Amino acid sequence: MTKILILGGGGMIGQKLARRILDENIFPGADLTLFDRAFPEGGVPAKSITGNITDRDTARHLAAHHPDVIFHLAAIVSGQAEAEFELGWDVNMMATWHLLNALKAEHEKSGRTYRPKLVFTSSIAVFGAPYPDKIGDNFLSAPQTSYGAQKATCELMVSDFSRKGFIDGLSLRLPTICVRPGKPNAAASGFFSGIIREPLNGMEAILPVPDTVRHWHASPRAAARFLTHAATLDTDLLAGRRALNLPGFSCTVAEQIEALRRAAGQKAVDLIKPVPDPAIMAIVDGWPRDFAPDRAIALGFEAEKNFDEIIAVYMEDDLNT
Image 1 (cartoon, rainbow, N blue to C red):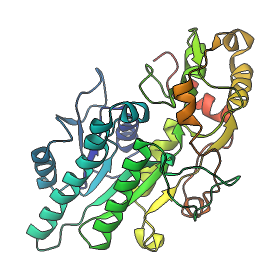
Image 2 (tube, rainbow, N blue to C red):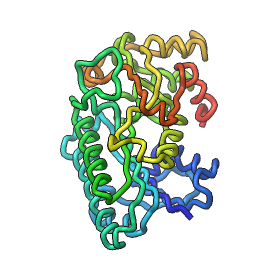
Image 3 (spheres, rainbow, N blue to C red):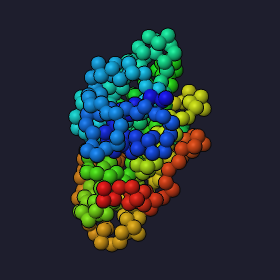
Image 4 (tube, rainbow, N blue to C red):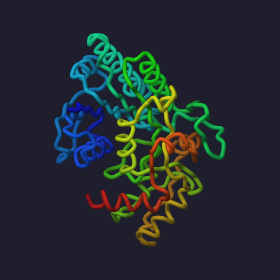
């Protein structure tokens, strides 16, 4: 029996991941535990633990159960991390430090036999301008936001704890996940989903940036696939480079809107209202726009090939739910 722990299991991606693990029998006979501050009503029927990821004793308690696979999705989003500096570092970095040290302690208590697989969700925010036309696998990590710095720090910790043999970890630099179901959150990138999700649900959407902005996207369905694929990947194939740029699709906001027009017509597009927001634009200006994720593709990671597919995934999986 494989013990699986999802940190951030009450969030959108955590719920998608848990559902995929259970419905598709990714780990036969899995003992699945979800951890988060709160869980959605009617969420995935799995063992759930409510708590604060920043609490060191909580990390020790979770590690003491010796999960075989840990998906670390717990974080506060980019906009909040930028606005609340101390909270961003506490949640997005120090919580990971406490967890890794708790896992190290269990590794040592076990006679060095316990070595869990840890899949950490990082972000393309670990990169900073100036960018090439496409970011390749050898482009340096030089974040220009607090969120990106926090994720980059965690990547280094996951790599070093893996090098020492305490865990078997890897970090996945997720594209912006779009179209996200549910209500808007504090992520600076939230409008990428909002300009599609809200019009599809007959609601007005605010566009805070010019439609020339280009970005890198994948669907929630692809995100869940990324995570389960990573959990079964032989990390020896990474040759010590334990952070991966994942596949996605690059397009402008204008191209997103054209895909919406194809899916739902002009009436939906008319619900998008441009309202410039200099604060969001300042953050978005520092984000990467396109990638050549050759390593991840060679390792079997897959995402959508166009934005029409991303909209279709939302309409199939989440529209009106």
